[in-house]
Image 1: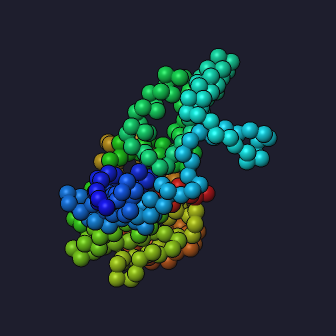
Image 2: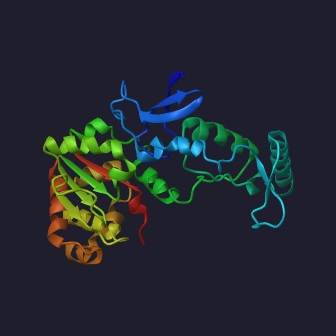
Image 3: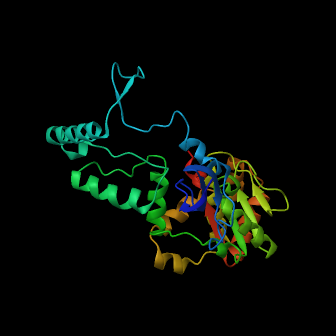
Amino acid sequence: MTDQIHHTSCTMDCPDTCALEVLVRDGKIRKISGARDGHPDTAGFICSKVARFHRRVYHPDRLLYPMRRHGEKGAGQFERISWESAIEEIVRRFQEIKTRWGGEAILPYHYGGSNGLLGDEFLDSYFFAKLGASRCAKTLCAAPSGAVAGGMYGKMPGVAFEDFTRAKFILLWGVNPKVANIHLVPYLRQAKKNGAFIAVVDPKCNFSENEIDLHLPVYPGADLPLALSMINYWRENDLLDLYFLDAHGTGLEPLLEAAAEWPIERAARTADVSPFRLIKLAKVYADAQPALLRCGWGVERNQ
């Protein structure tokens, strides 16, 4: 038996971007582990999903070749065809559709899995652009929040894990790092040891009392009133740098007008949280420097 270690990276749609070590014995994957050397973020551990990824590779139901439907749609009947036949049929259908209806009748739709530059930001974009296909964000779930975030901040490279340990205040809003960002957790614990105030806005608290300082169990869908009430509180207490906001942003006045409709008491009732806890969150956030906000996809699931 000959053991070989192959170094690769995780293909899952996750912000941790883990480096992996894959143990191969006799040509078959035996174990998948997190890399240690040279990868301080991965730090030798990975999630259980990826640790069992080889089960997917060798699962009997895994598709290994093209399948074409035959019979009635929805009947679940497929037949195996060759790669050559599959490519020829796709090309023929693309040509027919483009000739009859135009390229925009072709809708590229994919998301998740491998989101690397080659798979999601370059080759496929160039191909479908040349084809004249519909310009779609490739996913319906993340497009709204992505558009809003891009409009507000422009490019958002994010915050390096190491910078979490230097923050004096960390707000985790609509995100559960213990499930969806596990390599951030050690940095949060180090930040807490360094004296950071950690607050969580989430219907469910996924942290123990000694891991965080404040939890607001927001009613699902009431994130926006909560955020607007904090902005209104800052405005009323002269905690906003209005000159900076006006000089470096747009839409300040409409934002303040919308926030004025949500005083602390009203927002607290709507979000079903303690008004005192809401005030504390707003005050600590305003006073702490540097402060850090980590949002998850939870905030886009609102009404």
